[in-house]
Length: 95
Figure (cartoon, rainbow, N blue to C red):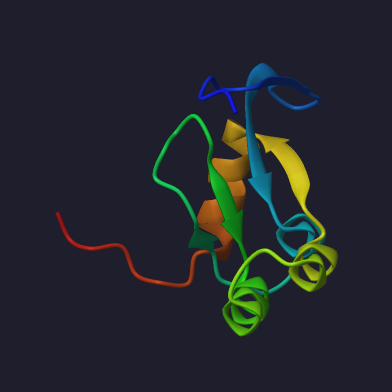
């Protein structure tokens, strides 16, 4: 598998790097659902909500049950950062 970042065409931000999040974060426009970031490599950003984290913990890996629940969505990195900021319920550490 390549470690190079994938580029996509975002309707809001144009050509940009791709990121993966759960469908719940894309579909929800109400209260924050929590945001669990799963990798620290900026060439492969991934995140999901607390409900997905619960299912992942129960399944202990990315099983078909988890994938079906997760409803993976590909977004650009700017959309990813915006969604992350909206749904992150943990306070940021002081600098």
